[in-house]
Image (cartoon, rainbow, N blue to C red; front, side):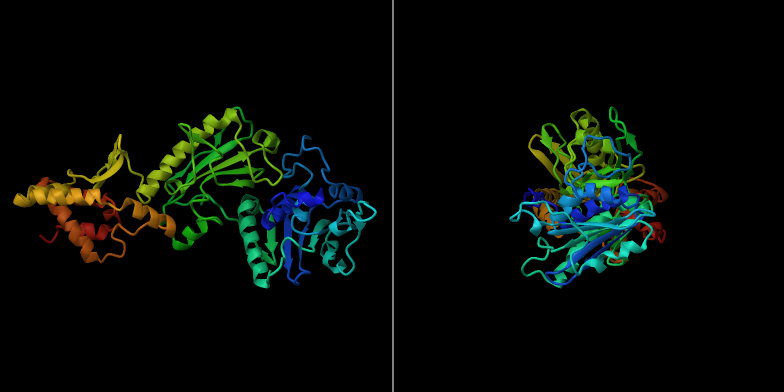
Length: 482
């Protein structure tokens, strides 16, 4: 059975996160993780300064299914099945040693060695003490007032054939990124977690408080679900982020994969991204480019595990049927805002793109029974003025506009955006000031001479129109030298 349980599906990061859950439930405030490379004798250790365990408590903790998952737990307890310590550890190592001490107590130490199970005697040998030669690895917690150390040895699921020191270092990096995401709210609360002597800093998937965000809603209490709270976020477009912010906010899996719901239990992240099987009009939502900026924080209490079908790995959840309507509504609204931000490069456009005092966009989308197409607005002031003054060339200009509309490389733009994980350049990016000024002069003259607009009003309209709103100094001097 134990050999079978090793295949539950833990990766190293998730397994260590399970052990940290136990430390936090034991009221630890400091947790230290050490990856020690010694070839096929490498080992991993997790130390905490929690309340520790007595000899009888440790013996219970080393049993599989040590408690009934249906029992009521403390509100801050992060465990459920009484399996995590064993299944997480055995998924990575064949030898599990746990030493612990309570306040004013003596150290107790027990060890499982899978190589000693199922032998000729068939007995379950739970050893006392560390393996010969491993005692120094357990000394660190004995100097503290109370705490626990978990030691993994014989890392047969990690140090496999061809595994090198660089692979071990890379693995520790993956673990750090996972823990920074999983426990970011608890790290913000003051719990300290370090890996190989370096403090882990939390990764906030929501860029909380960033001024460029299009949406950071209030917290919504979900009806008919005590303790379930949702908060909707739409992150800033890349154009509104520094390059370091953009790379960090992408998360361990990248922008597209990190969109969707983030399910927390007691401020510990259980599920990262995805749309929980929800959708509209008979179709489930998928992770796609237009909605990559949408992220929704969802908090559930630990009493709701069965309703939400939380698994042993704490990696899957299913929305109770009675709550789906509310979450679909919140997610649909968030996705729509995210789509508009993505499409307009960070600008939240009002109906038709005609914001107060702005000029309409040159490009317009057209919806019909045949699908969506994109066209150049003939009512745009510059387009209209040029056509009005075109004379005998008007027909040729209209044909040119039509050709451009019919040959927009939509699929190529989509593929380039997806494959290169960045949006195409535009909006006069890196253009010289003279080029921007030349375009502004043409627009200004069209507004004043063709539309009869007063010079000050024309400049004001241009100053409110994207992307010229990014160049107020150039807009302000247009037409003042005439």
